[in-house]
Image (tube, rainbow, N blue to C red; front, side, top):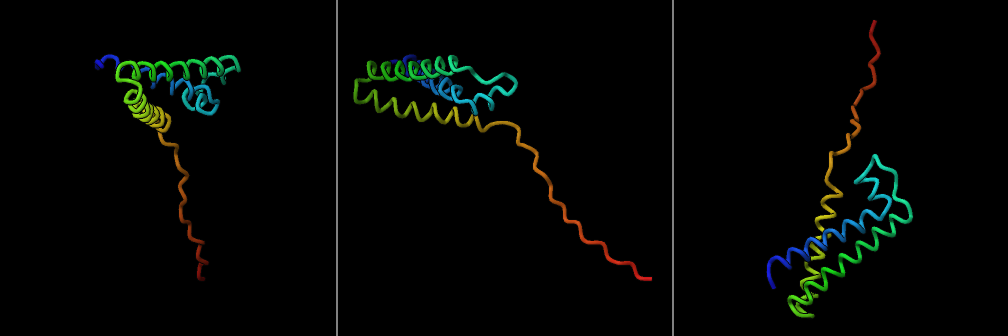
Length: 111
């Protein structure tokens, strides 16, 4: 198996994972906050694209490495692709935290 087909399988896996990620409304809002949520047709299209890309990656690896080794390599590639998606979702500017300041009660004045 050439390195190019392995990289193609990795690219298909990452594309498929991102498409499946974007088909979920909460992830869509996280990655594309200014655009409206996806319509039902777009969500179905993203899901179909995601599963098609994952299947293509499995087929590429199964043909290139043989069925047993190829599918084992596919699970490893899926793990790397999922990590890419997870780290992309968690990356971003941290939200500002509210500071809790200690304010002692005023002491009474002595006269």
